Amino acid sequence: MSLSFKDLRELRQQANFLGRSNINGETDNSVTAKYGVRTGFLIVAIILFYWLPGGLNDTFISFASSVLAILVGLFITALVFSFDKFYQPKGLDTASSADKLSDTQGYNYTKKFAYVTGHTIMLCMWTLILLGIALLFPTETKLNIFELSFCKECLKLSVRDPILLFLLATIVTLQRIFIIYFLLRIMYNTAFVVSSMVHYMATKMEKK
Picture 1 (cartoon, helix red, strand yellow):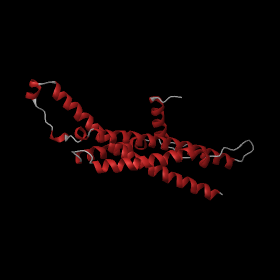
Picture 2 (cartoon, rainbow, N blue to C red; picture 1 turned 90 degrees about the vertical axis):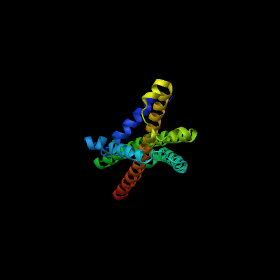
Picture 3 (cartoon, one colour; picture 1 turned 135 degrees about the horizontal axis):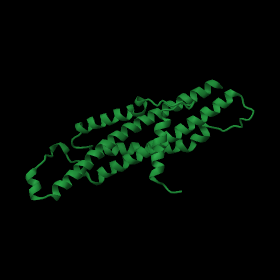
Picture 4 (tube, rainbow, N blue to C red; picture 1 turned 60 degrees about the horizontal axis):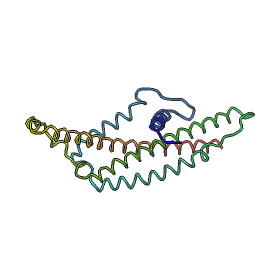
């Protein structure tokens, strides 16, 4: 079995879809539920981008990289043990309606937990890659975008250099925005996974 972008896209789509679903399989398909959080995080990322004209400092990059590496390890461990811990399939041929409902809820939550956690791991990996690029190319990624200006005379002297500078500025802009956006999504997903896990486990304990 090989990794493909189709698998990664499916992981992202399922995580976003199941993140709006409850353990009974009911899904909130409202515009706010679909795009509210992501749009809000994107706006915050753009605002923080303007507040960080020189990019992220090395101390923050090292700190964020260490935290993300720890989170990846924790999430992978949680993902491995999620099926056995949250869902134990039962023979439901003679089960009562309450047992069938409990089994369905357990299955729905395990699936939701797996996809959201898996997607969070991938967000951590992408963020680590972007942070790694910042460490590999410190001079380029600390470019102050707001000090750049358009120069018509420069285009007459050389077309290549202004185009390369424009491409660098575009890449650096996207890199910074994506880092901030991914970090916000990771924090949100972590809080979502932990709170939903505690709520589900508390609900199961109350039924016993």
